[in-house]
Length: 82
Image (cartoon, rainbow, N blue to C red):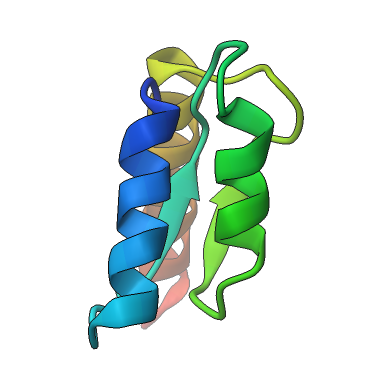
């Protein structure tokens, strides 16, 4: 989960290209004006499952909200199983 630093998302994408790192999912929601759109485009170009906040908006609260929503969905799914 990357919510603040577009440079961190760019570094992760670079590592996924040059190594065998394949996270099960990447949540990319950095915020700002410098390298934000580029970092999200780099994530989009990968084959890793992902959730992205498009454009320049994002940040830690957005990334945390995405994680919380995934946890709620997983919890609800677990409750439905006998």
